[in-house]
Image (cartoon, rainbow, N blue to C red; front, side):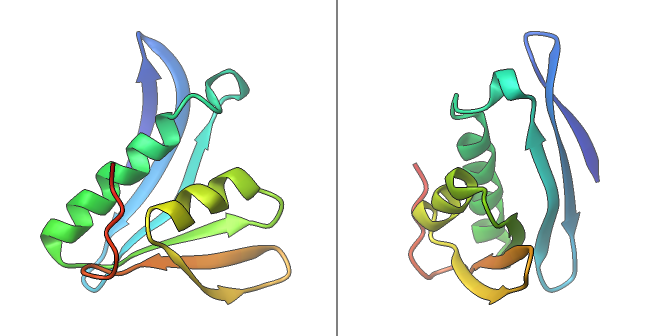
Length: 102
């Protein structure tokens, strides 16, 4: 599924999410420069984690190296680094393992 994220009628970002059989993947989540740092991403990620908890599925994201704020948000929500590559880290949240939503 692909979404355009809007705030008060203005496009501020985009989201691609895949509700797979075994896990939920978020291959793309980005915000415009003006929308960054306002908590929109953390709120959206929290909602995804809540939905995953209800479904009993893990959530997998890729976080590019150098995106320390995004990495920290995921760590705060209970994600853990599972794999790293030269350009990104694969981070996973598992249901029942430290749900830090709020």
